[in-house]
Length: 179
Image (cartoon, rainbow, N blue to C red; front, top):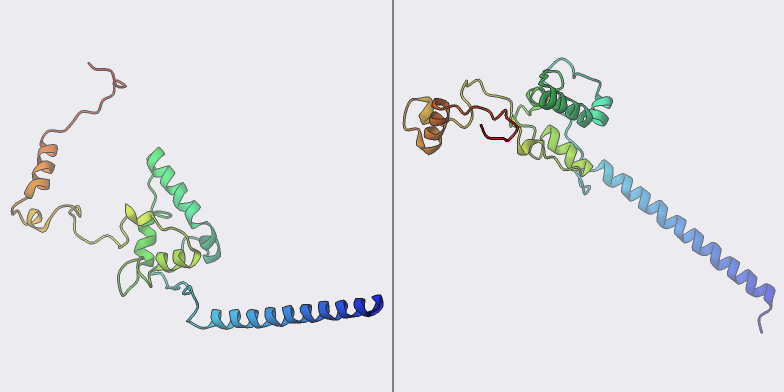
């Protein structure tokens, strides 16, 4: 028969062995995590840090990493609700400065915006409506085809555009009531 004191010593030894094993496993896992972060074979690629085309950003890098979305939302609200358009915090200005020299875009695997958003697991939906490349030097709207630019066949969209320009619609200012 095992005495109570001997049983207590056995349980204490087993508890100590279990703690030592857990510490060893945690040290190994931390060491492997550090090694994978330093190597390029980690699960999520580290964001691409491209230099902008301008002399400096509108704010310091640490601020922009943390608050760029707030600035863009503020700019959007000023533009859409108040009609105030400034270039400093506009998305177009950011794209012009941060577009890759290789692809001329902020999207793609090595794109300035997409690489950071992929790393942070944040949905990037700005470019569902906005251009991800700087504006070209052409004075035509991107929906105007090359044929229309050169005076050729305009197609259905061109005909509709010409019709709308020829017959402008008066805005309804009566609040929905008919005249």
